[in-house]
Length: 257
Image (cartoon, rainbow, N blue to C red):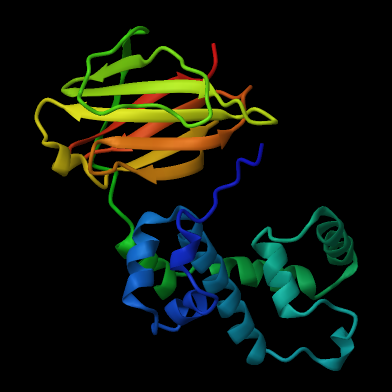
């Protein structure tokens, strides 16, 4: 299963958004998208670093006695850890014999650590979660949960008993089940309820699906308190992280038992 982080809403992004943002000429809609999308924040950060390297290369022309050396951009990609194993190995062999490139790589690493306006703007756009408490939900029952007036079910899947979790004033009911598609996949559908918040206050809350602490997918709570994930690996175990106004609710060990 591919566990790499991906854009949460590719339809909101066009091919010019990244560079436009770096050049401080981006769309307001894309700035809002960055606040919710870890993948695009990382892409912009990486392109910002490469832009710094390219700008530096324009102002640092190598002398003729360094004709066999790698250009600044390739050394910068090496410093950022962006090269594949073959390219990395070739550069490392060159660094052992070159009197100039090791010093330039060291300068590039120091240069890339300097404060960057693009990274600072990304941080300013990111949702601050550091101050929120993390509360682990406990499994209350694996049986018919309390009805909240919203039917739950995954199309094309076999029925499975809901699992009810509780974290302080928040209750989350999950249905975790394989689909009947070929090949079969795992589907997770959830319903969130709060003793202290109205359903409209929960609408739009971010729900992350994690595997081995890495985000696999993301969703939003809809206007009825529901969220869903589909096309998941049957033999995997996941965690769900729900960001609410006053805390982050974590539901561990989700999968087919």
